[in-house]
Length: 147
Image 1 (cartoon, one colour):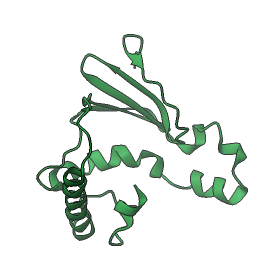
Image 2: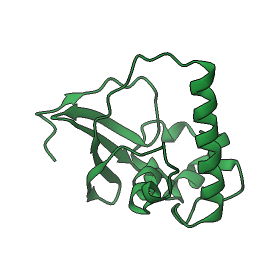
Image 3: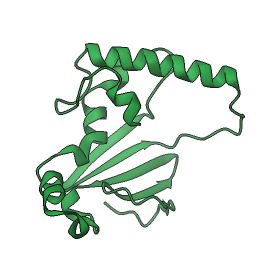
């Protein structure tokens, strides 16, 4: 995939599974990588390295979209539109998404309360259905506490 026409998005957080973020033409492109390609992998203990290398959770974000989670969201919540998914090799997934514009609207108690209500509804739905990829823990509250 050619990223030369896209603007690289600065990304200060060292997420093990994010290889790059780009935007252009109303699209947001996220490149996911397996833990195998994470530069910090050699710094992990042998146990944690084996755990990381033995899982496919690095592709969780792509799997959430592909599993149809968007169809299970309560009214008022949505995922950015997924336009395309590319898997150039077994260790990378490229998501081409809607470039969602942020707002400068301040967060007040009413807005926080509404967001909390929606996240609570989402948590209840996610523990009751199969909208998540198979390896996801469905323990009530686990997903929203981990975010």
